[in-house]
Length: 240
Image (cartoon, rainbow, N blue to C red):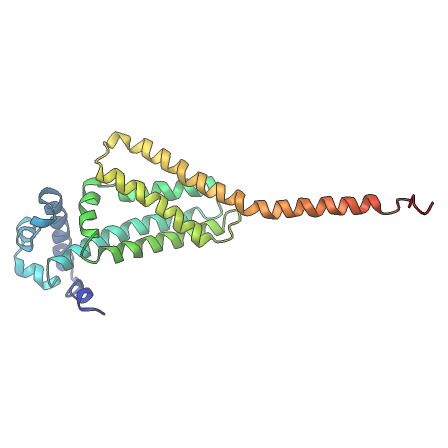
């Protein structure tokens, strides 16, 4: 493990109920300070004050501010991955359209449950080991989507893992842009509808593309066989 990665690891995990409450309070306080004051002013002193705890209590669990920020981001991302994994598991064997809708809706529900929190954590995701955490979250989601696609009764994908990875990327980009642009809350339903259309269209287009070569080959073989059948038994006019 690199030195940089080691400094982002918590000192210890809470075991007793009181410790669990303390860590959760620190997590909530961190998000509140991030939202209200920004990353540059999100210090251990401000976090401890907001949590009603001492800085010493914070350092019992985290060696520095960045380790606490990484832990908060990781919990946020794991919540999104957990939600999508459950939805994908529940929709195995469903139609392609149902799968696409479940994937998009579960992602948006988890990601936009608290838009201010999600936006504040983007600043953390760009630093403090956030890129690696985000990549791990996307990999988990893509694996869940790929397993779901493999069970589709109305589609066959030559490379479901690749299709799932691209579908995840197609969803993450627009959602990130919408959060950064502070899109009004009333646009949520329209955003969801358009993203469902986007992902569904991609999956269905890929489905048709993967089937087309087999259908075309089959048509050519059928025509060739029909031609052979027409020539069998036909009198040879040249010899007669």
